[in-house]
Image 1: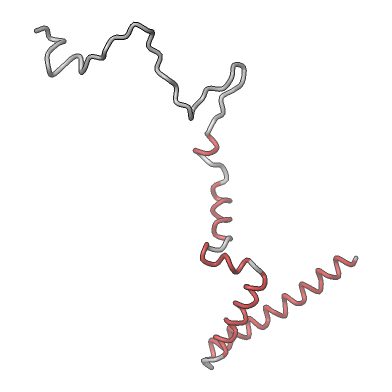
Image 2 (image 1 turned 180 degrees about the horizontal axis):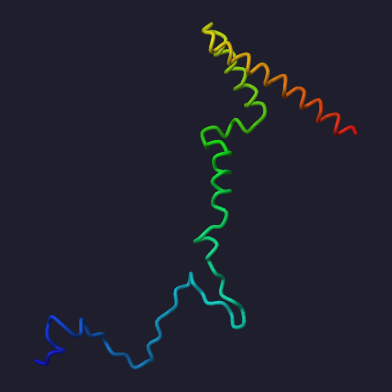
Length: 121
């Protein structure tokens, strides 16, 4: 037996020979672009630009479990429930947090009034 035909080196397996020419099919997912058109690159998806800005947007958006707070009515109801929960225990730190929520509501009302005036002008 020759060295190429030895069991530990050389040809791994033999395939059945066919009379017709062998043309392996191309995968359907990765079809080639028509002649004259460039192939689309995927560099932007592999190496996204502005990762720092995207990270800041991710921090600014609420998590999925708080998606209900994006609706104004649910947000107001959550603030009311929070204010009620802060005023019940009668602890000074919680009372200060409730006062801060009240000041936030006053600021929101002032901003709404200013926005309405800007719309009228």
